[in-house]
Length: 155
Image 1 (cartoon, helix red, strand yellow):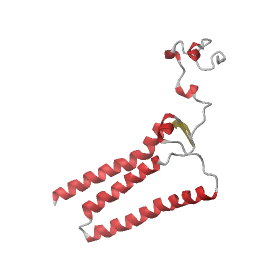
Image 2 (cartoon, helix red, strand yellow):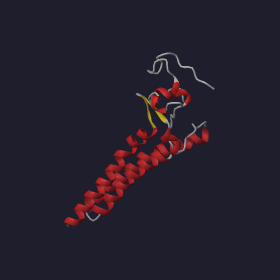
Image 3 (cartoon, helix red, strand yellow):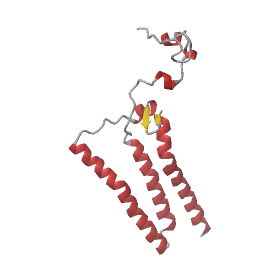
């Protein structure tokens, strides 16, 4: 099957030879090739789990490093309770929505990474979406462990 593209539609003049695979170096940019493909609007379950693991890592680092101090332990306990509510309420709401209505189809993580994700400002690649979501919590977890190691080694 041959796809017909109007002249200049993809910025390649009247030569649509890239369509038949004769010259793969002459392909248009990815956003022009995939603009009609379905786009993910929900995250795979692994992405929020990775972000949650980053935040849990921060709390673990704080508990391991500062729990010996009573005042710090109280502050960390309050932070742990807030984190439980912050992550627990959306989790419970999602579980209830799955039981009481149509839940959107969730892609697997590899399929999501290879595709695109719809945001309020437009589409981005799946890998870019994963990086934007997990970079801060995972980076902060590494930073918290580093701070904890420095604090413990200075005692």
